[in-house]
Length: 258
Length: 244
Image (cartoon, rainbow over all chains, first blue to last red; front, side, top):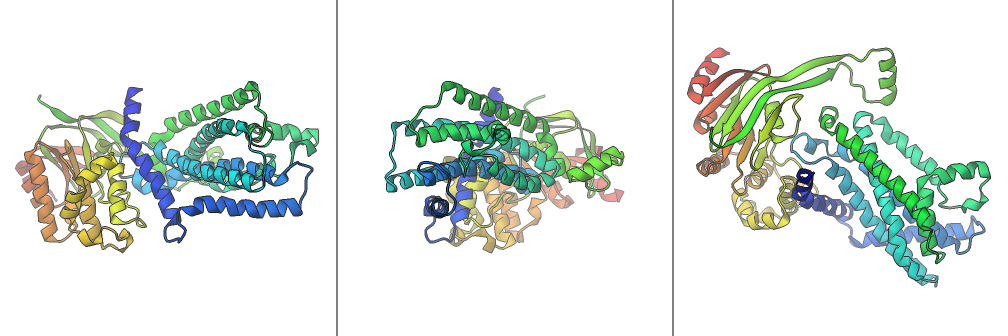
């Protein structure tokens, strides 16, 4: 165990460099540069709130914020898992030549997405301030569902990365899956409008639980029950353990398939 | 037995060469059901033993495809041996390919830190060596230029300068001295000689027998994944030269 920790510490600078590189490259040659990390979600939210408060309307109080909070959570999941999925394949040239702990590539993609969610979270708060929404002290607890979501996404990302090395199909398949999942998560609609049969499926979706907790804290000034956190937390922990185990079991064979 | 740096015991590496590449799930399932997945087993290395002592420089020679690079990669930890074990004591500077992990959109300066991190050095360590890297690679005016604009020689110079900072315990060289002009080659050789004097062990792969004789005291001749001969450089090289 100490061996693994030491190895991780040795390569911690690399994790940082990889994340910095991701961000640098994304905004290279743009005039506003890193400001885009904040501006981008802000503009997206503007579009969404205009569209959804005028065209589609569900009977939800403060609907723009409802959908924005859903977007913050769901986009993180879809972005982090998709990019972690292709992390091993994309870094094939490097993996073939230098010894680097391979999970680092997946983790660095997750970390880049964490930076993005922090930016879109800030954007969300800004929108709340501009729309004169009430800011509650429960806001400070919203890091809990986000943290659980990050753990969950890391686990899923590791599993996907392992599968993608052997079967490239998963990349295309997962794109479709994510689209389906958008509708199986109460991002744009309130869960109460669903008939019981479909509602059951949506409630099985682990992201639903995390999103509900997040909305409780951000929008409704209520602290979710410990049980609700524990349920999401357990699912996330299970995903992470599965992810680490599967990744660990297969990582030595990656080089034969990339 | 004093100060062993690398100990490779009975190392074997097997590759499964599937006749057709199966990398879609559908194909895989169909073929699996039809039992059509046939692997050609290919042993890239078989029972290779090697001990490298502190300060010793060992050359691996042999024809193309004899397993030299595969062996270096098992030592560097890139490939895990199918059988046998590899133990390494001390820090490794792998020069398997110069500038592996360079990002072509980043500037040379940014790449120094990125590449350093890939080799496991922190930003502080790299800052300490930065002047030396710039001086050695002679790229002073170009450090803020994205390296996609670099020539291959410039990339090689930068890669070599980064990979050989400090005094690693073990230096792995795979054909990297064949790049650059002759003046730079001399400079590289000089740097390697300095390392040998500071007790760095070297594992060297080259097709140039002259270079091998200049740098190494011991040579291992691989043929089809097996050790054909092992001994003092001169002896092995003489027979090797006349063998093909």
